Image (cartoon, rainbow, N blue to C red; front, side):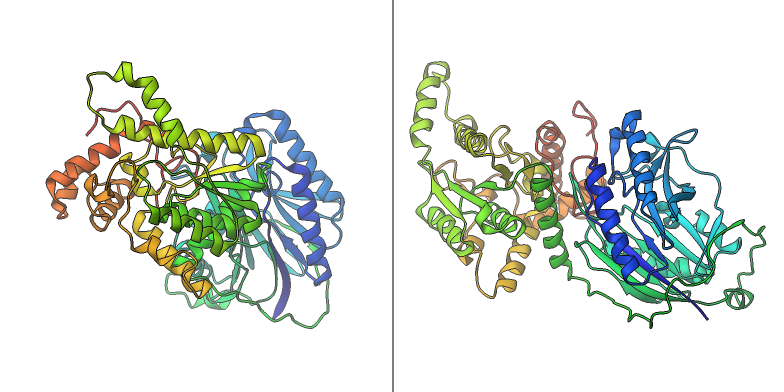
Length: 569
């Protein structure tokens, strides 16, 4: 049986940083060469970072990306490299460059362009039409595809297999959501077993605006059995020896019959293995549990959004509540406690317990903590507005003044010291508009924007379990949620209990159920009418809120796009 040594290089590249991405690619390539690899495989659009979005509409950017590929090619020796890049030949294609001995010896164009969820590839790219050629590397005929090409059951991977491929390489920019890795591996098991060929699947890693890429690159054998898995949420070069059988026997015994296709042309690159080193032991990294991988995703997103946008430190408004507590904990894990600043901004309605909880949280994590009381500003605003408000009763207007004052304070500190403001609103609140525009929505990154309230509690408990003590104080988790903007205020005075609200929101937002369908599912009709209305009329608030990482099946932002002006109910 023949053997090919593959190095799967999953990197944390940055969109638009062509020079930096080239350096990362070449460093990983050298690692693969030193490990005796025959081919080093990189992820989708590695050169530009994924997704580059409307940068692709700039011809100069595309030219510079192609020049960057040429710079990489110039450094490639006998060991083949497969690198994702945009190819502007005739039209713009999402492409994989096959590089060998100083030049690009071939380019594959992605055929299946996703245009759903967070993907907009039909906005930018033209689909490819050719499945071949195949590339002979270490005596093995290799077919190359890009991401969705293998997700589609009728993708070009099947044409490559029928045309003589003995190994399939698929490069990806597949963003994280909870449970996604299991879905990927199940899919690859099916694809490999269907064509009786091993599959190498290389994914990107790192945060990019609202998306998080979790890596987890894998290799499966011709039966679909897992051979190797890279780390999650970390850059990694996974080196694996793949035993490549002749696939014809399995196909002869396949009761579904065989496809009769013309043999694809083959470009001979390295007819013999480049290394006679002893076999490497396959490495299968463990997967995190569901809460652990969600925590890692949020940490990765927060770190990369902050650092890649030129910030090194973050500031959080610490109310003593569970939402600000989890955001501070995530920031400390992402940036290091020495780079996190917490500020308590008590008003006349803030409880002593909440102030104490904020201080205790800061002490547990060891980050900078200060108090800036807002009573003086609050009184001044009320005095300034007294004449205009004369004859009206106090309502949420006066309450929201406190939140907006806090937003001004945070932005002033950010402006003075260059700190990234991390907002603290969760998905449940954002869904129903239980936020103050230009108040608690003011900031640079909404860390838990896609995390429902009940999941916030679960994640806090998970983090405490990792710490071995209540690093997020148990008093934070035990108290009734409250914005503390009026005397004795509690969330459940304005909203249904979160145990009822979150399942309803999941059905309405993530699964697109109508109000009538929600009632048929057993939700209370009056609650459904009220909550769906709140979700619909709050779209304008969400559109003005900071971006935040997607971790669910459907997130607000680029994943869920509804018109603000909209009368459909």
